[in-house]
Length: 157
Picture (cartoon, rainbow, N blue to C red):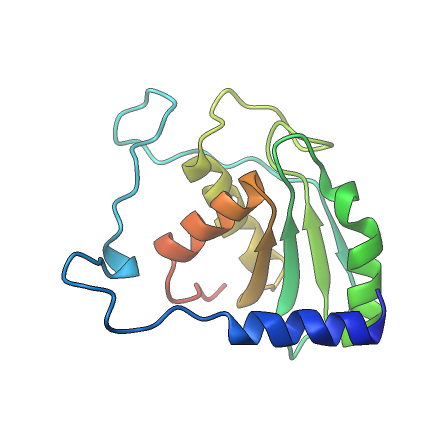
């Protein structure tokens, strides 16, 4: 990834913001968005996390790490090139993670987004990566959104 391309991408993401007010009388606050019940059939039970497989590229600990979450048919290796380039160009720590039932992570019958979010809520503080920047593709993006909704204030580990 060239520095010029990366700067363009960052400029675009800074420009893409949702308005804070004026969305209409039916808009919800993000902190009040309901979360669907756990799909594994265990009514009301917290999902049990699994120990995820990951690759952490070293960088500056004072800046939030970049955390990449892959899509349904992917794995942490999908982001090898971009993770390496971003670690070199930004000096940040970069984490790529295999979601449960993907890549080298353990398999579990509960494949709900709640369970995948819980896996990350357990992993990120253990690695000292709170706060961080979550970057997800498809399934990973949905997991990142749910994690952000469940933990609007970053947990301290």
